[in-house]
Image 1: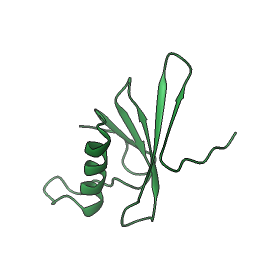
Image 2: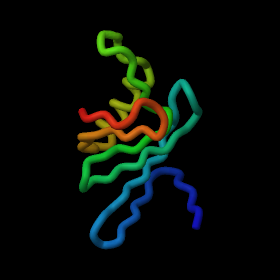
Image 3: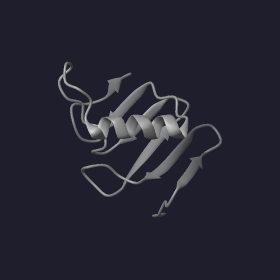
Length: 90
């Protein structure tokens, strides 16, 4: 089943919960969706977060995803990007 998400959606089987958030997007795309697993504190995203070199200033997209996570009140321990270098612990 395919279901569109215009703001937020929560899916649960009674033991685990997945929260889906639609966002306004970033410099790469006009919109993107974040998937959050609150029990594991994992944020799954595609293209919204692309870390640069350790000594580089944060990109506009990194600032945007940080502000979005803060605004939503998510407790993120790990970002699991679908593209990129792999999961990153925070």
